[in-house]
Amino acid sequence: PGALALAPDSEFLLSGNAFQYMRVSVTNGSGPRRDLTTSTISALPSLIAGEIPLLERDRLAYSLLSRIDVDIDIEKRTTTDALTSSPLPNATFAALDVQFHQNVDEGWYGLTWARALSPTLRIGVSPSVAVRSQRTQGSVFAMGENAANEQAVLQYSRDFDYMHWRLLARFGVSGARDSLTYGLTFTTSGLGLFGGGAVRERVNLTSQTGTVGNVLGASYQDELSVDYRSPMGAGAGASFAWGTLRPHASAEWWAAVDRYNLIEGDPFVIQTPNGDST
Image 1 (tube, rainbow, N blue to C red):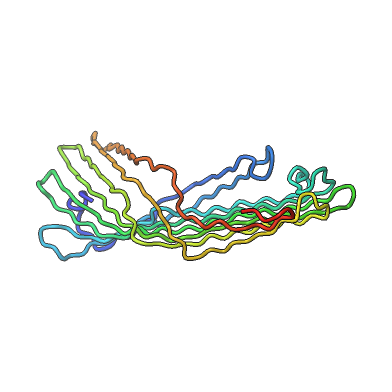
Image 2 (image 1 turned 45 degrees about the vertical axis):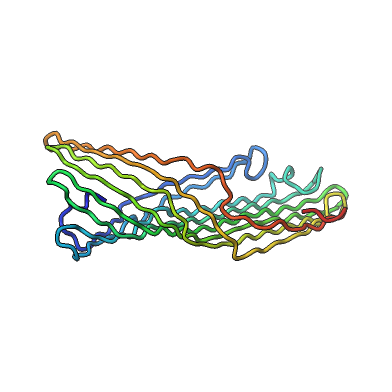
């Protein structure tokens, strides 16, 4: 934020030169020694910003920052290597279908105020509203048949989604001395404003043998509260010029967040042959 006081006047800025490579692997995701893997390369709309010419001495700007954009699709379908995943023991035929889809999006929308304290030192602050949304879906479908021509089918799926709004601020100091430029930032932890989400879960195990089934249950819970926690952080950067060469270096640190439940649904009852179980 502090560097805004040094930047030349600009009415509008669109930055789209950020690229993302992401690889996700789930060990034993579709059975023993069978990992699930996916990878993507995508371009990110990193920043849209512009200056608001309202202040005479200070600088004021707006910004729309795409902070997180993740899209994961993992799928596995097989009949040739699925006997160990059969809902029936000692299966002679089996089929397996595993799917996992996740989309996470977070944007920061705010204003930046900056002031030059001296020709070599500037300060600034960027209060922002952060909007985070996520949708995660996972499902397993397995079928099997044994030598006695008895069959079983397992279907299990769960998904959740939410949207959460929080308030945060980033404080910055920017300076320059001779050919050295430097900057320091501090980002506050997020203050939750409001949000909501849903949790859905379904399970069905039907077996002709009567030894592993039959199991049936479902729960669809909407309008649940969401508790998303973001940490405080700090960053630093500097550059130094040697003739026409100017190397840049930067580092960022974020505090740890203890494990917690972001969204929780109520327990529900599953119907089983030997009575109900939670």
